[in-house]
Length: 295
Ligand code: SF4
Ligand code: SF4
Ligand code: SF4
Image (cartoon, rainbow, N blue to C red; front, top):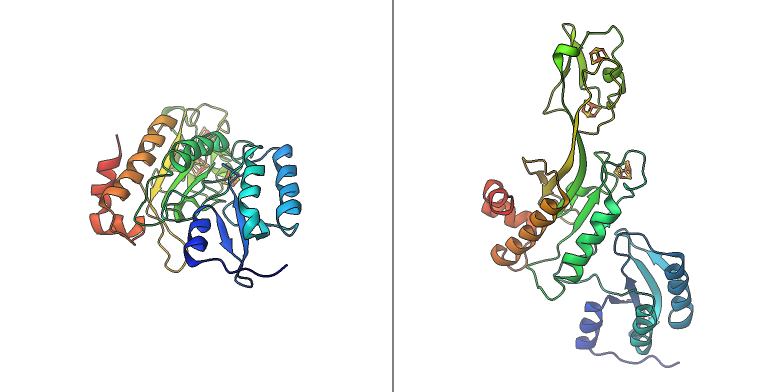
């Protein structure tokens, strides 16, 4: 088939729909299929494979942010492909100065997971990726949800990152200063230590992984608070910034969703066109931003 010329405006428009031009051809695109939280059904998987054979080159590439790119889609196949995917509840997109597709780890099923990452990510997807689709931001806005401080999906390198937490409470009166302390030996980062006959957990060094839960046979470390840590202003790429954790550990999903919403709205209202959220936070001051979006 002859190659056809696609206008610059059209290339821009279809990019907004999640179709990125293959630099090798003027009329061939890769269509980005959104997976909501990185989890799709077998039927959807089959549909994406079928769509790739029908409308693309029969190949699928996985992106680092949990979307699937159908390769080799000719310009005229873009709309038929979108219609086909819609029948299976799938859509394309994920580009532009908007909330980007959420990245979630498999904390819901992972042995270390402390929160239901799939469920929270799906809610974030529905409320902010879909719900704020018409909202143009100063730059792209990336959100990641991780189930525990192992940070497999690097939440702290996203504009907003959420990490599951389990915070121990120590009852010193119950601690017997055992020779071989099971809390101490279960702590993967070795910050729980018996000192002068009592267990010491430095609250600033503890990453709240909860791995010491149920380890003490005498009830010195039995109560834990489950929650969410939220990092603001991380980024990865041309310029790197590590996000900074908000001082409060949030204990309900609704609170987390409210903070994420306020962070996006603050970025929309107070960010300068072209700057990432990390720059907005640096410019306005972390305390100001934290104050404005918490509670
Ligand atoms: S971050 Fe934690 S919960 Fe998520 S996949 Fe890694 S180890 Fe599992
Ligand atoms: S925390 Fe428990 S296991 Fe560790 S020294 Fe105290 S009583 Fe013993
Ligand atoms: S919660 Fe994790 S980091 Fe903190 S003391 Fe327990 S095992 Fe160590």
